[in-house]
Image (cartoon, rainbow, N blue to C red; front, top):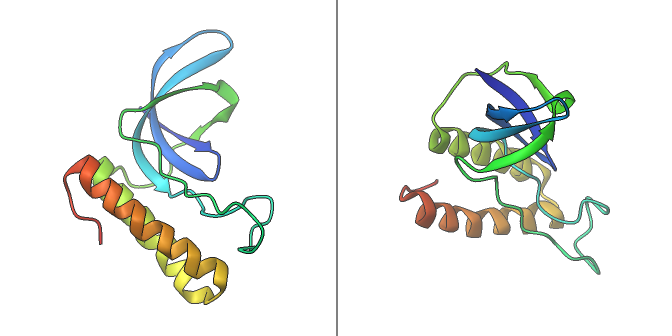
Length: 126
């Protein structure tokens, strides 16, 4: 059974691997929303900030979470690479509409990340 799990600025479909009374160990099965790029404390700034490059959590990566962090899985179930491609495309489309320095820098980050993903998953990301 899959659950929705938010981690930092990304959102993922996860399965529960192990659980105890306080926490659960979840495994990443798909990407629902790709993490945002840039400085989260200054979301539209590009000057005088450290502009972070954030990768999506990897397929089968495991994280501990509080049970309260798991939500109902309410999206189409997809394989990891297909879901990653959709999440990247969705974020890119939103950024292209903005036409701001932050959006342009975020798009540059995503281009580099797509190359990393290509090497990691042996699949092209458009």
